[in-house]
Image: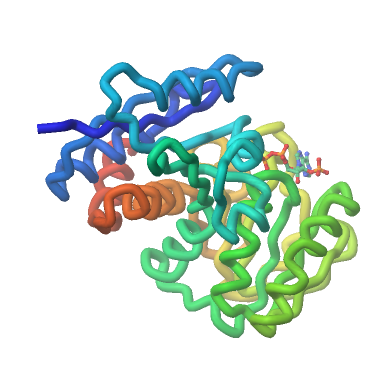
Length: 280
Ligand code: ATR
């Protein structure tokens, strides 16, 4: 039987949970595939991708792409989804008869986790997205698609938030979502859902917003997990919000990639519970 080959390309990549997640998906769905981590030199993404596609077994079918290569992956692809066009970044590549198709499953992964695993209906809600880098760009389109009444994008460097919002203006109009840019210091009160897509806690910095942004009973979600998310999640809990890390998004973006590659939806909630138990 042919075993199809997938990988995650990144730098660093040793910490990645994706090989474990996809191995478990394959096991639970009976899909014959192998998925491995591949460390890519910082200046060698295109060459490493070619090398993987031309693997001597001829069985390479796709890959995930992580930091810092998501932008390069989007630019290199022959075809790309609408989501990639908006994010200008790709986390999932599929090899179709020699052509590279790019998608970005980060945002739908986040939305799926919030709606199905955390049980928060985003329709009609007020959302605050903190950050305007790659992580924020990956999730804004799908957040708009989820139908909130309003999304405010706030970032330390305002022009970056403005550029991100400008790219998403037409989609927001189409979906009837009010889309705004604010500086971190001019945020008003009361959001239902606050999503931290900044790297502030990684940098050891304080949460870049005042607690008044949290509506009573708000959900505060960090796109990171483990120690990198701790500062933000502690802050949210201290101020009465419910806190959610990015582990659910990680598993759900993987499930979307798996579906794109295999046409099969894996039991993501089960795998998320297993991974959480493993990490605790
Ligand atoms: P990523 O791909 O993880 O999003 P990035 O593109 O470097 O990484 O973006 C990092 C984000 O975190 C940016 O929104 C950045 O704000 P700037 O655009 O102003 O640089 C934000 N960020 C990083 N450190 C921060 C801090 N100490 N306070 C507030 N925002 C911070």
